[in-house]
Image 1: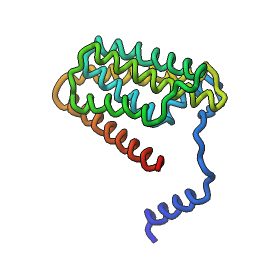
Image 2 (image 1 turned 90 degrees about the vertical axis):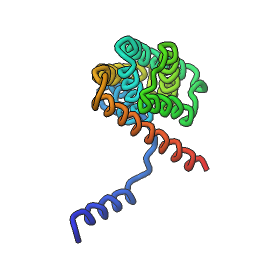
Image 3 (image 1 turned 30 degrees about the vertical axis):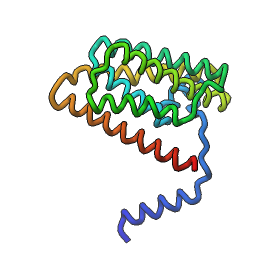
Length: 200
């Protein structure tokens, strides 16, 4: 028996004996703030949105990147705090996929958005995903400190991505950023199909 076959059988055996997984807030052991920061890293839809927003902002230029670095986390925080107060404001997962796929597709297409369009997209995406985070954290028994932690993680990720992608002004670096956008778009479409299949 080959090593790869043995590893596959071991993975299958583990999958069969593992208990069912349930969505919950990640427990880091460092408190609510850091639990909120870690939540972004284990939420694929949120993480992909932040990646796409950072890439789009960087491709749009330095003023757009500066706006996104400030506005996305602020909208995320506002949406999270509002959803903690009124959990009914949070939309379903299908709604969260709309800004994700749209933002990533704009990166892949290297679309030239007007500043107002970028602002609406960034703030809307932040509010939608922040509200989903806030509702999930409230359901897990977490407070406003966790929402603040998640918004802080958004600041870190979007700043790093926007700063790097602003340097991709032409040539292969810009093509690489667009390819990343196409991968994120594909991942969003796959998530949509998976959710649609699970809803049947």
